[in-house]
Structures are given as structure tokens and as C-alpha cells.
Image (tube, rainbow, N blue to C red; front, side, top):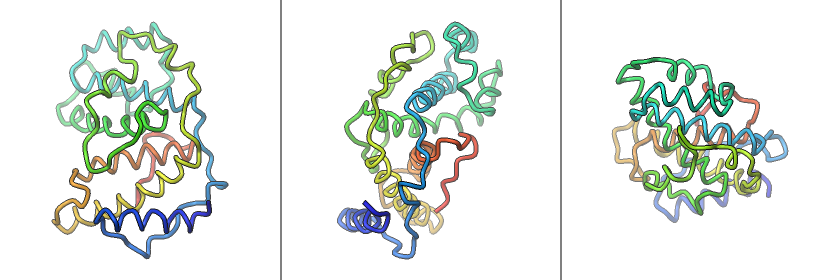
Length: 211
């Protein structure tokens, strides 16, 4: 389906759900112009986020580093993630910032077909901890799987998050109630994840979520 048709479809859904729509927002790139990340890379990114989150929520530094070494995972992390994981005593601010990535991981869980849908009016599910390998678990089977959603469904999700993020950001800037009922960072993290999937060459630390 053409980008303009996807835009129309998304706007109709948002209006039905009572989410503000900016008719002047442009269409996103045509699906044919995108370079989707391979499923192997998406699975590595999910494991990387799982490990970073484990460390951010208090997993011992030594255990995380041992799991990375034992499973040959040294090259799956971004520069900022590697720096964080290597720190024996990261700051509270740094940990809290990286904890937000739980919502990006929830979005990737959807991309990989591990959950049936993402409700953008609620926080990630408690079952996320059981979906992606954590430090101390063998990630080989997870990394070897080729299961993921179609590029078409991911593309529609990218358009939806682009427009939902505008509404969420606009409300936040104007001191208004969030139209989705969740904090703006939730949509930002999910938008980041889906944009990274749609632009496979982009570095995780540099993903654009502008609206």
C-alpha cells in the first residue's frame, strides 16, 4: 500500500481513538525506499537491550560481563551501551535513563512476533522478562530463529508511531494530558525501535525520532 494510503488509514484509526491528528505531518518514506534490518540483527539488538536492562535494574556487573563473554556477544552493543555495561558503579541517572529502553524492547518483541500486539495506551507487559534471553541464559536458540513480522506490518506500525509520537510530544510540550495515557518516553522508545528496524544501517545511539 502507498504511503499516502497508510497515512489516511492511520489518521482514521487515531481519530476513532480520540488521539489528535496533525494533517500537515508528511507521509513517511515509501516502503520500497527503506532498508529493513535483517532478522538476525533485530534479534541481536533485542538481546543487547535485555542485557543492558538487566544491568540497569541491578544485575551484578560480573554476571553480565561473564554472560557476554561466554556467549560471544561483545559486538552486539552500541558504544553507549558498552560503556555503561563496563562501569562497575554506573550513576543512578544513567541507570534510570537506560531503564526506559524497556519500551523499545517491548516494541522489538512485537516485531519478532513474540507478542500479538502493542497497546500504545499502556506500558509494556510484565511477561517481557520471559520473552528475551537475559544474562545467565543461553541465547543461541533465540538468536538462530528467523521469525519476525512482515515488512508491510512493520511499515504500518512505523507510520502509526510517527503520528502518535507527534500527538504525545505536542501534549507534553503544552502541558496537556497525554492523549495515549502513557508518558511521552514510552512512545519515544517504541518509535526509536521501529525506526531502527526500518533503517537497518542506522546506529542505535543515533536513531531519529523527530516528528
